[in-house]
Image 1 (cartoon, rainbow, N blue to C red):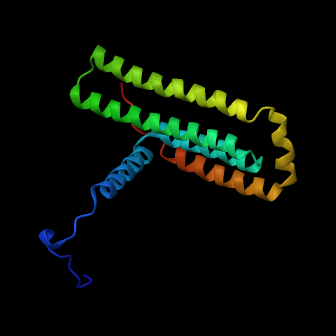
Image 2 (cartoon, one colour):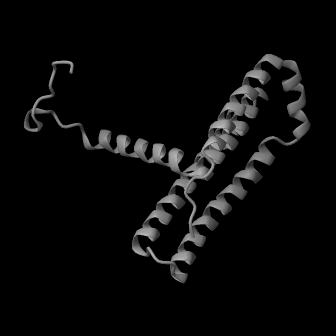
Image 3 (cartoon, rainbow, N blue to C red):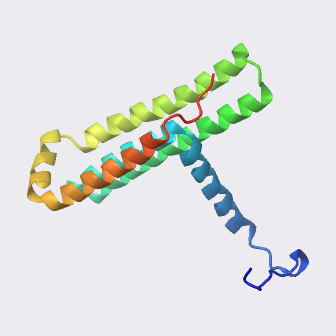
Length: 165
């Protein structure tokens, strides 16, 4: 024990509600990472795309577009997980409507992911433009690939994740 105790609740200064909301949001992201396999895989994919954009020295506008679509995919995957948890709470037993709700939420993730893929292909067009920057900066490419390998390892290390229908 450190010998230092926190003051009673009535004497503590409450943190502002907006500050607490960031803590709750961070807890949601931690929960997504720890329990959702697809979230971890999509984080690895996002790292791959953003890392390639940095290595290719992509324009700020294209980089911003890629950041936005990566964030949209991760946000949609987190929302899908929230829908699945709520459906499981409301309908612990299998039910056709529960399956439909989960399928619709997963479809939303797929739609956003396909849009992100299209945006990525357009941002990197022509793809041969990547080869020059990667050859010109082999050390940066090596660090990027090492980081990507570590992230993929972390994503796959806990692959089971929660998936039920």
